[in-house]
Image (cartoon, rainbow, N blue to C red; front, side, top):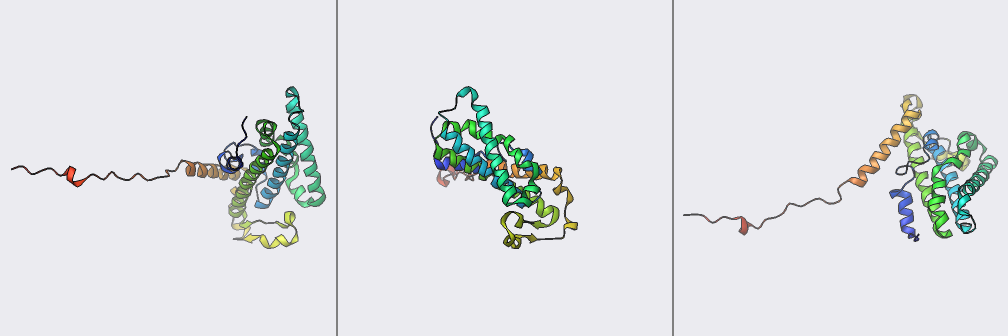
Length: 232
């Protein structure tokens, strides 16, 4: 398998093969956690960390893993990385860890991570595998933040509420209040709102991809050729 360029890897992860908008992987945490942009950012950063760690470890050890047992070994490496990330969150960001709850351990079951391990990291050198983990992880993170931001803004009238849980006390200044929570659209904070918002994002991306890139110009016909000589 040939090694793709770094530019191709990033284009695939962020846009052409985005995990959330194209592959539609990891939808359980994607839809459940994104009630706020802060929650989406927290889960996204955890997923990026796990993707980079697992891709690097699997790429380094790919020659030493027997093909017949590669999937159990991949799952073991992923579970170990997720456990480490979960313990770090509990130690340093306990409030955010409580908010995200079970969805941090459930990163183990995120098909994006196992899929990249099997399709890319197990077949590519370490540097390419790390770039792939970053690209795919950041692509997933962007979808989480945008989805969470839209739902939070429409549903409760804020943006990056409780950002201090993730970034520290100084991040309280990042919270933007547009209108009172009582005047928000409650549906956006419920599961149907998550499905509708994600569907709109997928449709928007597909419209952008399918839009005409050039405008056809009318064919100009030579006046001399179209002029018919008058008949006596």
